[in-house]
Image (cartoon, rainbow, N blue to C red; front, side, top):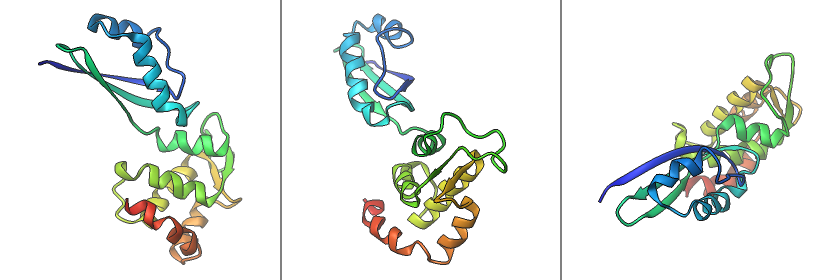
Length: 167
């Protein structure tokens, strides 16, 4: 049994049988349309975002498994802020504003890729990325929001998501 893993970055919900997926899959004699439909079904929640996808193929049986990664923190923040690209000058040019709860939800989504041990620490990591790309949080600079998080201003909201974080 030989397993082959193929990796792609696709736009959530919008993979097509054309390049790069179709030509890469054809030597393995898989039903390309079926694979593409499966990818689109699994990535539809990330519509409009670049999503890492892995297809593991058993070359003997032609069985395959599609695994979907999580878009980058930057991509998730830009989607939440309704922005097309990060700011080239985040100190002076803001690209959008998000709710504090958006930051918490992104922290939970990215949990497995963060080194943070607590939800509070994860939220501060996401706030750092928000600041770097020019996203404000409820009209405030993310650096200011980090201080408020440390002072316990958002503890009530964080406690609401604690259970989800611990899953």
